[in-house]
Length: 110
Image 1 (cartoon, rainbow, N blue to C red):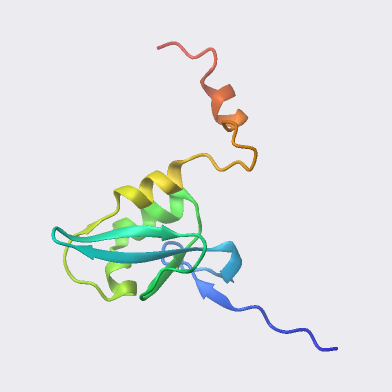
Image 2: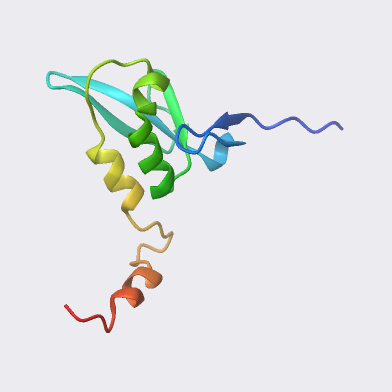
């Protein structure tokens, strides 16, 4: 039996191609104040989506290059606060804090 090809997408930050399952889908949701970027990890929100690696470096590149507006075909200022929180949040499956982040803060002078 022949294997089916997995869909590939391009990251709006680093511009590298990757399987769609490895990238985070981002959509623009409009409200009275403008548009805000929302993460769509389940890939179910309606509308045009942009894809990026769930990495702070790719997020910073996309913001600096203003890639979200072009990829989502939205004009104006985009609020990326909710997306930044999602990217910066530690991702664990157990619900416990990420040990690497906690351990890195132990013993530091304040």
